[in-house]
Picture 1 (cartoon, rainbow over the protein chains, first blue to last red):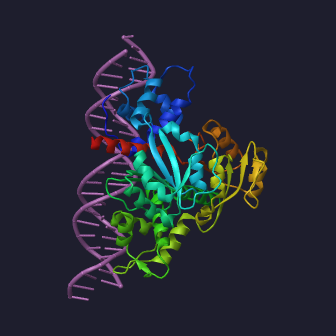
Picture 2 (picture 1 turned 60 degrees about the horizontal axis):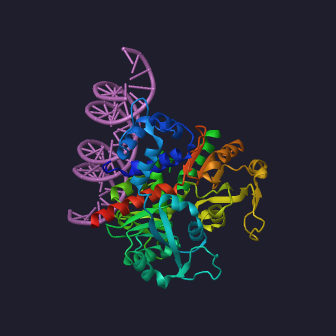
Picture 3 (picture 1 turned 135 degrees about the vertical axis):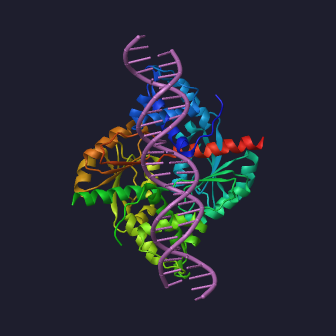
Length: 212
Length: 212
DNA sequence: TAGATTGTTAATCGATTAACAATC
DNA sequence: TAGATTGTTAATCGATTAACAATC
């Protein structure tokens, strides 16, 4: 299957398909139709079919897609089959939660270590190390790290980001609620809780108004 | 200023404006132009102007918008001025991190308590309580809670979600990587790390290919 | 064969961008 | 007045949806 260019909107839907496909028990029927997938996820079936056409080499009319093959295709497309190493900066509550989260492996993400200006003294045995920030550059260089995760306060995020880029990082996952200025070839993905909250509180406000 | 209907895309950009406006020091000039805002955030200036027109009652040509007034307008529009109470289900690592995060207050979100099938014995003094799941319904009813935050494993998310809706919740913030089936009047906001990771690993793959 | 299902081509929709008129 | 800046109207762009032809 040759690699097609997919738009960001398609890309963002792929993990949802994958999660659903994986949640189907082993013993179930080996095939699944785009219609079934669409219904399960509350989406349009044409959209699902178009999305799948981008990553798989096709389903068979009347039968659908082979579930296992589809899982493999999406995982390969998303690059979950080869792991990406990452470093995390900012070992506060959120940082440590992400550091300890086992689920990332499933997505091909491997956080090697965290860095902090003040590494906590009591580090969990066998957990991933939290190192002083001074060691960041040498660490990134020796491990050829390409992704950095920022979980420092917003005020320090740009500074940390600059440092990461100087260390050779190409992609930044930013949990700080601030815009980051970066060169064109660097991608910043914002994980912005404030955005989600805006959507939620908007809905609640509308609900309240409807009621009265 | 009468309340306009804004699209989700506009809504999602508002928190970014707000964060930037708030990051400007008190002492700076009292006005800011849409052009300046756009440049700072790497956005188009027409887009910024259109967005602001939805929430503020206007800037003045040649001068721009009054910063303080703009902050107030956006906060009011997003409902950050009156707090929303929420409960959190699933006191694992992520759940506890969110529970302990002070920053939500700024967005008008107040997590009252967490619930778990097995509340941990050692709860931080003065922190928010982690209660057994059986107490969820009475708690929600007495506190008239409208928002629920789901941080349980994907396999249990739907069950928890149903329970929340039965308790009168109107908006769900779902951190589990799974689709939730809900009635039409309930909003589910997915906080999907897998989605962000997909975008990031895609970028890294493209970078690698360019290099060789 | 008939019908379910796929994949594609065309139409619609919404959001972004560009052009321009209004204003301080 | 001139110029910066706003706000609006029109044009473009991209993504979603609808219609339909292809296939097992």
